[in-house]
Length: 293
Ligand SMILES: [Zn+2]
Image (cartoon, rainbow, N blue to C red; front, side, top):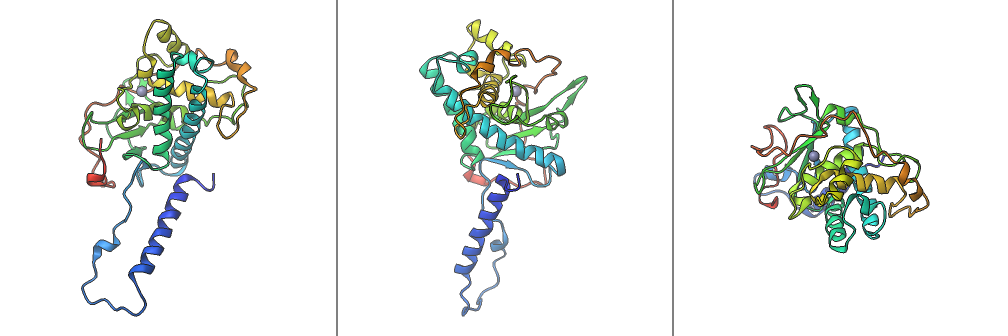
């Protein structure tokens, strides 16, 4: 991943600065007023998923970048699956009808859009801002913090054990689809965030296994309100080659061999933290009025 999304974003920003500089500084003009220090401030407003500078370093930074990238891939695969909503893998995790498929595809599309920088700011950090990564004997993979209807940008905190998860294998390369992965975890957390869930309030309504999600569906539950359903749809679809870029469909036969009953997991996250007093001091401030929820 030598050309990660972050590198691309930074290089585009640098290019814009160069162009801006060329316009503002004609060679023949001397400044006639005091230098405006505001020109030195960053001219971009963080949008979409944004790794907070300095809070994830080394391997952790790599892991978070991979998690965001993979979550976008998994979301894309899930969208492909939603196009055949009466079939597996979609109907295993969601009700197989058109309104449900549209709802799910909308959530997953917003995941992809946020990854591309389109949409309100969502901060990603490796700092356990609210001390929820370890609670008693429970280790948490990650958690989301936001104020419902509030004006502070939401945060996704990636905890140490979550950062240790592996990436998804290449699409259609595994005979046991549906494992937890960095992308699975990030997709799970992103669906909690209001700017991605839209009008839904997506929580944690099942256990952590794929079978838990299906049992909930069979019991008449609405899995569009469950973060695990989206994360499993995305990862399962990816593992079965439903990537829009790859368009492999020959490994759907692997569905029945998948990881339906992952065990030994502690809570994937705590329920969404209800109060978010704001980003910790010293980190990049939100983009003011340009950030809306
Ligand atoms: Zn959750």
